[in-house]
Image (tube, rainbow, N blue to C red; front, side, top):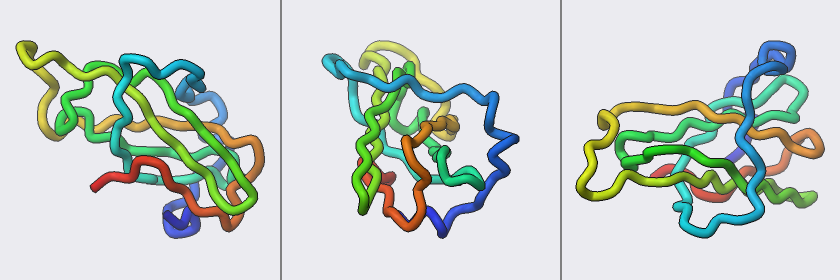
Length: 115
């Protein structure tokens, strides 16, 4: 996805907001689908929306971010509710952020985009 196609939020407004942890180990975690919602004005933070209810997500755990000169890959991982447990409402949406090592610039964003 082209990050210039999403809204730009002031970097100062995002400075103190929590970020997803960077994961090394993803055993027992499920990659979640996401939609890129925004980027910071300095291009160093990306904001994603995850439909928690539709995916039956119990908890979002963290993300893996890989950067190259041409693109950024983001995979957001979580744990799902078991089949016997109640789960979140179908329309519950979560907003999550990751920081980049260098500004996004014209690089595309991929990984696990929402259907």
